[in-house]
Every structure is written in structure tokens, then in C-alpha cells.
Amino acid sequence: MNAVQVVALVLVAVTATGVVLTRDTTRQVFAFGAYGMVLTLLFLAFDAPDVAMAEAAVSGVVLPLLVLLTLSKIRSGER
Amino acid sequence: MRTRLWVSAAGVAVLVVWLAGNLLALPPVGERAPAYGLLLAELSLAERRTTNAVAAVLFDLRAFDTLGETFSLFAAAAAVQAVLRELSDEDTREPSYSHARDRRPAATSDAVRAVTLWMVAPTLLYGIYIAARGHVSVGGGFQGGVVVASAVALVYLAGRRARSGTLLPERTLDLAECAGVGGFLVLGLLALVTGAGFLGNVLPLGEAGRLLSAGTIGVLSVLVALEAAAAIASFIQKYAEQALEVRQEQP
Image 1 (cartoon, rainbow over the protein chains, first blue to last red):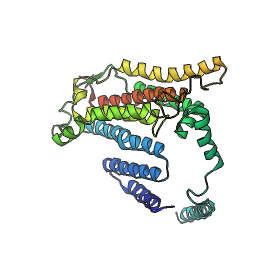
Image 2: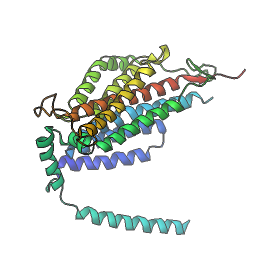
Image 3: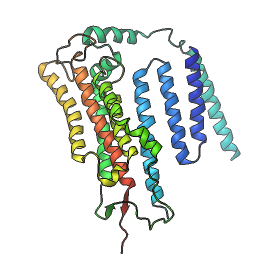
Image 4: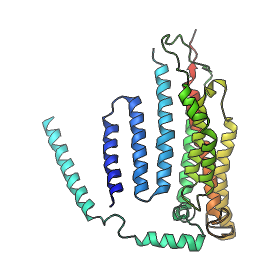
């Protein structure tokens, strides 16, 4: 295992813990986005560029956008 | 309470020991190439003329699994459309400010607009590139499709497009989705007719590394891209519309 792989694994552990410890939903979306980017790095470091690309697109764009839009919808209903 | 804590602690301890034991038993990273992997790398080039072994697995050796995945995306898109359909008592317009006088939707900032607008066309092009070259290099249908759909997301981010109607007509997206999954299925059945086996190769293989090569792998990849792009674009569009939709107040 080389240094990049070790760093990627450690970063995944740190950011995943960060997602769990973030209690505010809006902030959690961004924490999850960061976790996704780190996962992308991890897949890249372990020679899986195809998976890395799918992960980057889904966790970087699609999921945060859908969750943020949902949150904005829910909050617009609050009086 | 105390008992519950002890029981869970015991469970966690067993799990940690078990996982650590298995972790240590794993072969070192990257040192031993599994026989299956080596075989795949050899087969995909020799038998299917594709330089991306992952594509050979996704769209030939395990194409049936990919068909299932494509259909689950199709089903998810259908479910989103069914749940988020426009009801008769809903009104698509800006949220009425009477709901919260102090709350107005923030205008898109100049910084966001400046960054997103010029990114739309390159993103679209990049997505098409990724999808079209899945059988040659890194990427493939799903990845390319999601990148194309994120160009749609960028349009929504760049402006307040949703206020002036939808970006892509729902019917176009539906047709693209049907063409994607339907084409996949038809190509698979076509292989049955020619005697190649379901989703077997029926097209000329060509020369490895060319855009037009690897037989059905490239075609199936583009069909999956069509399905993924249309499904995810419709998710984004439906959600964005929904965020601007308000229920009419009963008089």
C-alpha cells in the first residue's frame, strides 16, 4: 500500500465521521459532498477510475442538489 | 439501560475482533493479481477488442446485470414522476410571500452565475465524450449520462429557469428513457435471434482502440447513457419544479 492510498483511507475515515457528527441538515449535505470527493480519491488511488467517475458525479452533483432542493421545499412550507 | 450497554459492547467487541482478524488475513494491496482479473484483461482485448475491461464486464459478460440496473433507474424515474406529479389543487408559481413575509428566495448571486454559465457547454461535451468512449477508455454510459444531466443542473443553478417553464419537455425525456432501456432490450433480443445468446455480440468488432469498435459494448454504453441522462435530468427538473410549487390555499 502506498502513501496516497493510506492518506485516502484516513481521509475517508475522517470525513465519514464528520458526516455523522454534523447535525444540521444543510451542513450535512456539504459534509457528505466532501466525503464523496474523498471517496473519489480513494477509488482513484486503488486503480478504479470508472467507479471514481461515477462516485464524483453522483455524490458531487446529483445527490446534494436533490437534497438541497428537497430542504428548500420543506422549509418554504414552514410558517 | 446498563444491561443494554453491556450487550452492545460485547457485540461491538466481537465484531471488531472478527473484522480485524479478517483484515489481517487479506493479501497485501496490489501484490497478487487475482486470476479472474488477469483472465478478464486478456479476454476483453482478445475476444471483444475493447481496451477497457470494466466495459467488457458491464456490457458483455455481465450485461444482464446492467440491464437490471438500467431498469431500476427507469423504475426510479417513473416513481419520482408519479409521486411529484402536478395535482389539480397545486399551482406552479413562485411561493406566495404571504406564507412568510420575511422570507424571499435569494436571487442567484453573480458569482454563481459567472461560474456556472460558461460551464454548461463544456460539461455537456465532456459527458458525451465520456459516454461515447466507454469501451476505449475510462468512463462509460452511466458516468457520461450523469455528467450530461449535471449540465441540466448547471442551467438551473445559473438562472431561475424554472420560473419560466421547464427546460426540457417531459415528453422528450420520457422518449429518451424509453429509447435507452428499449434499445438495450431489443439489442439483447436481436442477439438471441442471431444465435449469439441474450445480449451477446452481434456487431463487427473492428480494431481495438477505435471509436467504432468492440461491437455491441459501445452501443449498449451509449444506450445506458441516454437512459441515465434522461432519468437524472428528469429527477433534477421534477425536484426543482417542486421547490417552486405551492398548494393553493383553500378559500
